[in-house]
Image (cartoon, rainbow, N blue to C red; front, side, top):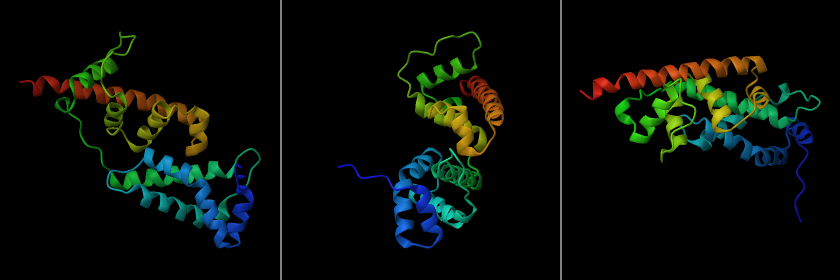
Length: 200
């Protein structure tokens, strides 16, 4: 028999009242959501369990600030706290390793050329691990640019979903995505321009 999912709204009230069981159940129910966000936006020098723990610390510290709204579940608020916590950790690390043409495999170089070309309609047919390559490329962007591109293209999220998760307005998400795409292309062109120097 399938177990009934606890009512999160009532759990919030029990957490506010300081019930220890409520804290535990709340964490168990929301852990899969939190760890998924953490794994998507994990700083290089941080363990995912430590960052997930930090998310829940923030959630419980701010639980009194949460206000229930019709049609907006508690999960959306927790996702926003998790995303903000990850962004803060990424900004604190400030790690944007420089990617060079020599770092790319032949297939990845082909993908890079596809990204900077204006006249190609189809992606190259290669054995390149596009997910790994795109992560390398996204690491060159600012934290906010990296986040919006990852959510849009790696997680296939809608603009509305990104707005709910980040707290950015829907027009704000669209503008960030547009600017991030332009910056990503600029990064790709810069990497490509280093090829002639590395081949000498």
